[in-house]
Amino acid sequence: MAGQATTLGRELVRAALPEGYKEYADAPLDSGRVTGLTTAIARKDPALYVDTLQRLNDIGREASYLHGREASIRLRDLHVPPDLKQVRQDLKDRVRTIQNSPGLSSDQKLDAIQAEAETAAKGLDERIYKELLAANNSMARQIQSGARGKKGQLEQIVFGDMLMAGSAGELIPYPGLSGYGEGTTPFDYWLGAESARKGFIGTQLSTGTVGYFSKQLNNIGHRTVVTTADCGTTEGLEVDGADPDNTGAVLLRDAGPLKAGAILKEEHLPLLDGRRITVRSPLACRAREGVCQHCTGVRERGGFPELGEPVGINAVRSFSEGVTQAALGSKHLGGKAQRGGGFKEIDAFVQVPQEYPGGATLAEADGQVGKVQEAPQGGTYVLVSGKQYHVPAGRAVTVKAGDRLEAGDMISDGIPNPAEIVQHKGMGEGRRYFMQQFRQILKNNSAGTNRRNLELFARAFVSRVRVTDPKGYQGRLVDDVVDYDTLAADWEPREGAGLKSVTTAGNLYLERPYMHYSIGTRVTPSVSKALRASGVKDVMVHKDPPPFEPVVTRAQDFLRHDKDWLTRMGGENLGRATLDAAARGAVSEPGTVSYYPQLVRMGG
Image (cartoon, rainbow, N blue to C red; front, side, top):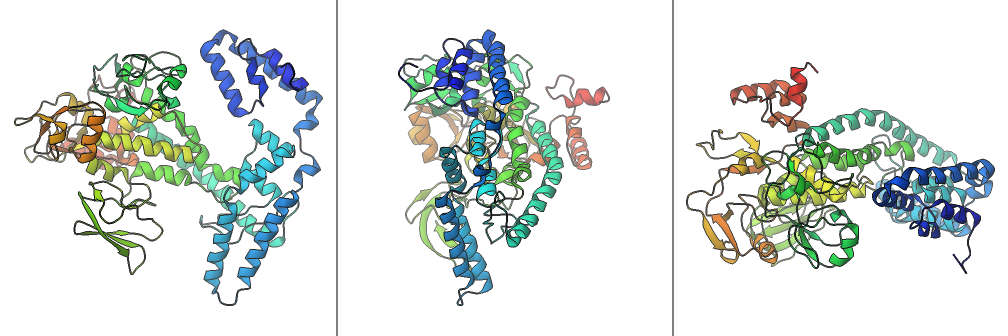
């Protein structure tokens, strides 16, 4: 650019880029910027895509051949900057002071050292990366480009392992404070050896675990197939207008200058910034089975998915690679302690165990918070309308005396069990919550994906109800577990149902879906507020709950309750699944969207 300092490399890249994309050369082409460039060309000028990538590849190949030394490390790249040396020395001094404290027991010393290390470790890898990048460190530049390496590995080389995981996954209370580039002390070496061994073994064991987990996810998503062009729903999901993941969604209601039915594009997002908009979504699709094209929205190829396209499995694949890396992360960090929940956090969220690790405490009924006091065994007691809840030590209470709570509201921080959310707040709200929380968990573990993929997965995962009427319902027996969307497609408002104003429908049960809320949702103050904000004035309601209740089936057992008995053969606990299918008269129909029956019939 005229009047601005540049480099030969930058100008070579600029010359290789087609017109309209040359501004990408104005900043370093790191992994994120390369992704943005290639995605933009693929979407807007696909005919230029291959030639552009070839020209950029030629530049890279020639540069590495003629100037390869710039892509390798130098001895000075292993040096620790003076200020980082001082940070490390200060931490060593604090650890030594704790070790020599006569008033502390051995356990207290270990706890204090671990606390010091955890405090020092926060943001340390980012600080090291930025300082070395500013010093033109070759390793930092490789990380910036996305070519290789991670910030945690850079920290290990020039600073030390810091927090490490032991053989049982526990945090080692002594920080590793010798960088591998300068050589380690014998003490740090032995600590690192146990941690590295743990990382190696964990990688071998995780390979099978991840494959098994991926199969479970595919079993969940495999029935989410595009079955119709338009389900005709008048409901949708309310989202932030400027969310980049809106791109490709169909607008349900007018928003700003855009009319209902518009397909949202990237250039529309600034027009919707600061607005709440309603889009078509799999969470509100009314297809009897699978999902419709318009609720799925425009996909990666630039158009609506074809009828029969397995969008559920495609959605799973969009984040399964990230989940794999979360499980195998110890391979790249040699046992270095992870600061995110990793694969265990992801797995726990879809296995919905009764004892949920790191779970939030939820209110089991509506009520008002009374006394909040310390529990003698540790943690906190919270009284809600006469019922006492125990918040474990380590979890923070998020309510105060006088607060009004609804069933399913959080009393403490942590991750709520999705099964409890569905039980208290209904199928529709449970799906929305699952999508939002799973999105955050995947993002925290570098396995993030587009929100609309998770809407498809949430529809598939949170999809079952259990018949509760002793007389049965529509030929189904009490305790039968059935597909909600199929049941909802045949649902007719019960005798005694009627239209009521949203403001006067409190504690009644929805007889038809509104927004993302499902049939049978209890109209609580928060539901009423959300419906009014969305423009809903009257709702069809009934005084009694419906003859079914939503349930969440853990991923491992998901196929055991499939309506097609041959599909159940693709899951686990086959003896129990087969006996249950026989006892309840399950059948297998040729026209199902599940591929398992056809595989069985073909001998596959």
